[in-house]
Amino acid sequence: MGDTVTTSLRHSSLIDVHRHLGAKLVEFGGWEMPLAYPRGTIAEHRACRSDAVAFDVSHLGTVRLDGTAAFGRLQTVLSNDLGRIGPGRAQYTHLLDEHDGSVVDDLIVWWRPDGVFDVMPTASTTERVLEAVGGVDVTDTRCVIAVQGPAARTRLARVIPGAEAIGRFDVAQLSWRGVPCQVAGTGYTGEEGMECAIPAGDAGALWQALSEVGVVPAGLGARDTLRLEAALPLHGHELGPGITPLQAGLAWVVGWDKPTFRGRRALLAERGAVGRHLIGLTTEGRQPPRQGAEVSSGGRSLGVVTSGNFSPMLGRGIALALVTTAVELPPSAPVTLEQRGRSLTGTVVNRPFVRPGQWASDHPSDGSVD
Image (cartoon, rainbow, N blue to C red; front, side, top):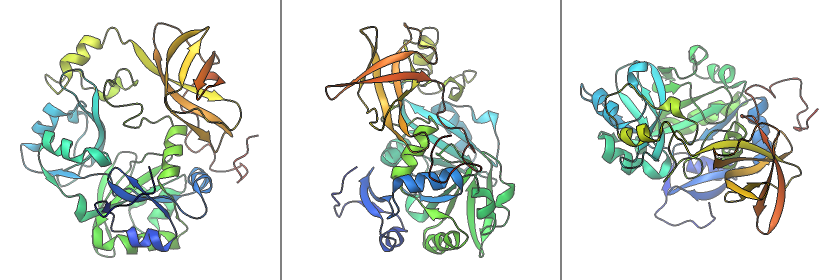
């Protein structure tokens, strides 16, 4: 991310709202998006863990497929098996490289109740996904607002009646002030939440309505620290060139029983001998581990940190690391992290770092640990 803004950047229909709220805007995946609002990333992060926040995630693409051939097309291209779900459900899946099985993109498919498929890639890969699966890019026609946190369901239901009945990975078409909107029980924070796709012209009014029922704005900075505490992978870090779903611990995203999908042959070859895997680490103190830090044990290099940051809820550094499977690293095992000429002591821990709803009640609002 950086502060340089050019005229070629794309904008959400909420850009004027973000500017009015005093958001720090940065470039991300070709979009100008809010990194944080004046209260700051840590406050936004804690608000999501304790109550409910709203993220503008319109930078995520939407590739729409319709018609009888859409199901078959997605089945033969994407890794997961759509036969496991049906209309009115969402599914996490991968677009893989045909040759080595690495993750070109991770995405969500919303199989809408009307039978239409909305495929949602990450910000910078929409064109590649469109080329692979076909369909129509409708990203500019809608805005996507993610309402996340333990109070997300109850607060959203005060604005969009019927939202309270939407379960995890359900997809429903609801109405807000006569405007149709797609609402899915999906998100990227580890907390309960929903994502609402609404026509672009109506997004500002919905954002205001959410604010009036106590949902506070949050930026991409908090979204990243939240997903890391939840140990959720990020493309370009835990997923990407050279990293397969099996190495990332996501074998459940692979529909092994499907006769064909991109990258299937490569994954079958790797299936019995995965050479590295993801682990979770914590460090003492406020200095966070950073991507690229070398992880070692007993003087032997094991791998590298893929994502690292300071955990606002735990008050210490946390990290995900991709390490060799040749050395057993059980929970509580010590490791050394080398970064920028300094050594940090790390400890292997179970994932996720923070459980859903853990901070919803009976905890201090300042995020301190008992």
